[in-house]
Image 1: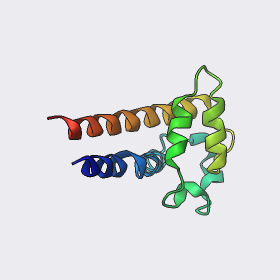
Image 2: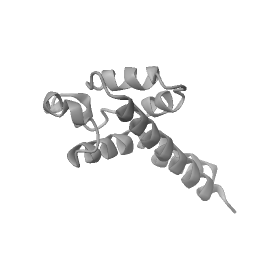
Image 3: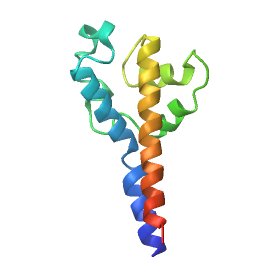
Image 4: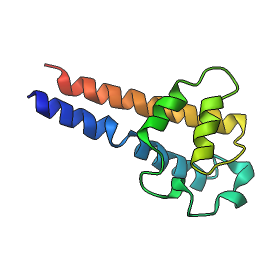
Length: 115
């Protein structure tokens, strides 16, 4: 039973949280709701954001721990995936996405261990 719980947790969080965040970001970009001021500069499909696994799960926790209005960690993560000079709103949205995906993973993990 314990092995199943660890496998379940890895499948819903450890392996896929970053990928879920990446897909949400791409969807918001396609709907023109994120990174609006930089639309022309992010058309390069070679950036990590356009590649599966380009947004690592470790980035989710890095963005989540960001405090204050400077978004230093979030900006650093976005720069790592090829998005330069994001706006305050862009950073706030990405942080909200990371927090919600993380919360979802925690709830799924908790639901799987409930007896």
